[in-house]
Length: 133
Image 1 (tube, helix red, strand yellow):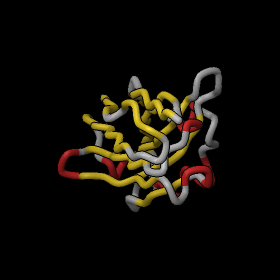
Image 2 (tube, helix red, strand yellow):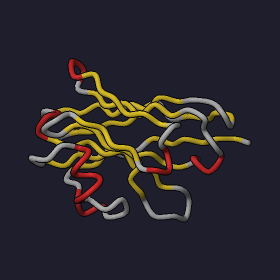
Image 3 (cartoon, rainbow, N blue to C red):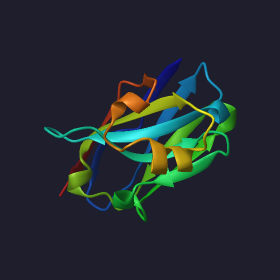
Image 4 (cartoon, rainbow, N blue to C red):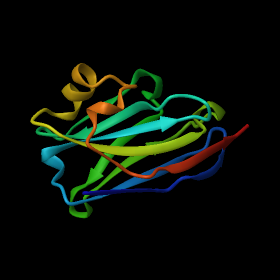
């Protein structure tokens, strides 16, 4: 199993970026894909999820209205579209995969705590996002 993030970069406040998580070795319906960010000096925290048995989506309250998550199943890629970016969104962004019978919405809202990385099986190496003010 391999997860590779891309799409990070430097953007001005209010701008947008689309991050990609290219996944190989798994089927999206068998796994939930989570997006996480880790700001300098802070713990890693989940922000969005996609996939699982119902291919549902889930967004943490902190990013609702600004971020969306989607997929291109043909490319086995999950996207995190970020808009209205703020300097406090500056962080390394990671995707992770968890094999589960649950859908993403239920898994990420009711089972996996946002700041507990032990609920995830595989991780990418991350992509850096910097938002300038």
